[in-house]
Picture 1: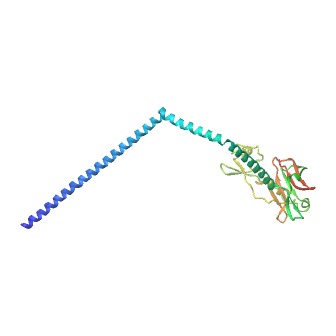
Picture 2 (picture 1 turned 180 degrees about the vertical axis):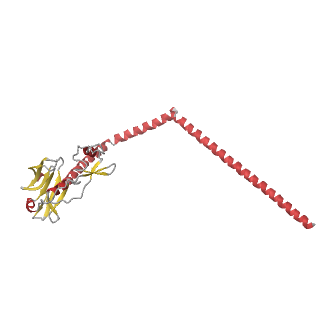
Picture 3 (picture 1 turned 135 degrees about the vertical axis):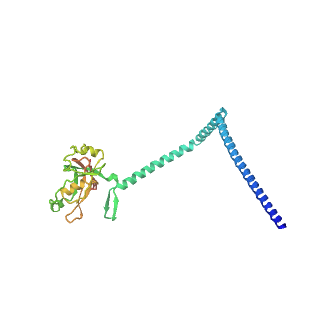
Length: 285
């Protein structure tokens, strides 16, 4: 009997502890919920407070007193700047003069450097050095005029023309164009015979398409032989010039260069020093 009562007492105590624990947990949970709610309320109040503070600042900035204060500060700053500039006028004038002289000196140095970059030199036997010829000692002379019917000029040794010039090379007028929007290829002499001919599937002339940048000529790999075809290939290349090859395949036979405006007469000038022509210029336009 005593054992039964003891067990009942233990069970009752355990149940009481369980109920007390549940009540305590519910109480703590309620407190936490209240604290969370209070935190949210505090945050809301703080937001409202910041909002009204910003509003108060905006209204303050619109008051005449605030505007007067800002303007007074700006006026004071400008007056101080004027006073400083007035004090620095004398030293500023001197500094400006120094800087102007420095700029002039630098410009002179630049002109000298530019001249040295393109300066004419000659080999001096006594000093065994290349000597820069003063620009004032150079005489520019008009040498003559070259007439052109191939839109190009060939620079070569006349002796090579006698035994190196090739007449066995045939010229191939292979002008190939790509129509940019589709990538389709069109050939001169096949798809059109002249540049004012309307291409049926494009309904435009080659000249119009070229002007629109829709017709791009493809550069073909050519051999720049020492011949008329080789010269034509050189002057019509993308670079506008090329070195021509001897019969054995090495370069140096000549240089063919394209003129700017095609056929016509082109002036040639020379730079003379101590009786000799040291350099020539061909005006290609």
